[in-house]
Length: 85
Figure (cartoon, rainbow, N blue to C red):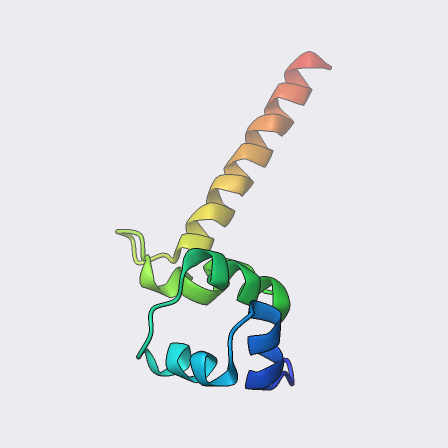
């Protein structure tokens, strides 16, 4: 989707394109630091990459839960501003 070759991604992460292939196939494990570099290179948030593996009990993805919490926090902040004004 980002029009980036395995070689280019590997260079950004500091590994060979063969290692990127192993990550893609699940042959090799990916370190957290490499995951972060890959996500930064692809301009995506790590939760977009792995979020589907961490569903909430309600069936919501981690990103959905975080967005819900952010919305709740914004609502509470708005209530505080109303009280102070």
